[in-house]
Length: 396
Ligand SMILES: Cc1ncc(COP(=O)(O)O)c(C=O)c1O
Image (tube, rainbow, N blue to C red):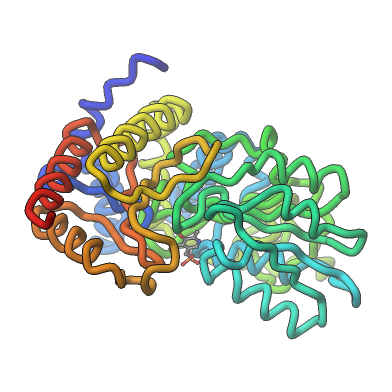
């Protein structure tokens, strides 16, 4: 695992050749091989040679590869469209009773993990208990304090979209497991980048999409749901692939018994995004070959170097005490601006300077967000630090 040739891997991503790409938290780069897999699917449509059994095989291989990536079983994975669909599938299929509550740190969640809770509160009358963040971090202690005997679900992002800290998922998972509370994770900012073992972490359900850390396309996601929990949930949406009809044809109606598919497969609906599946299949295959721990070590090492270099250049890197590096480095002050803009003129000017010099990054909640993946290297980090220093010199 220590012998991964990341320099060779980088050459598979043409997007690394023009400037510095540090924006996987919005969307990742894809490889030439992933592009070829996408082309293969489109060519089959162009020339009328698409083969449905092969397309279903692709889906099952992709499902199995994703399961292997997070140490789950294939039956614990549903194929979805995005994070929102996965989160909604779990939240809506729970049998909420009057007086139940769910716990969330809404300030740090992406809106797509806030709106579904507001909706379920309106529809069912349950209470959503919001806990405050601590130094920009989701706090297991605050969540523990909020949990009571009526808490049925807890949700958290494994890494927040801003400021991008890791959450202590294992600590929250333990709290939930001890109390039979469903722990629902938004894993989209970490899966594919940070080593993720859903069993070790005590995760009951986790939603991701494929365009970020999984280095695939928009319009496809995965929903992990631990078998024991999936079998306690009744999906609200139902279609052919959520029903277990053995080997029967996809158009079969069955005998009317409508037995739910095992595990998380019950959340599958109709036909899949086969083009996005071809992309995810190729990119996850590359990640499995590389090893998730090796990817995490590579990325967090670079992120650490970037944070250190920017701090030494006098920039306000957002840090939280005692938090291990994630793949995201944030610069600025939390709350200093809007989703896509910064109020602080110095930060706005630094952002413009970086982008004019070929650095691809984003602004989230007023903070400059640099996000890294396996294709980044030390030259990217050095370039950003050099540009930031040059900018500092010219403005001070
Ligand atoms: C933490 C997090 N959750 C969810 C999303 C998006 O959700 P969806 O895949 O439903 O568009 C993003 C970013 O786009 C995100 O950063």
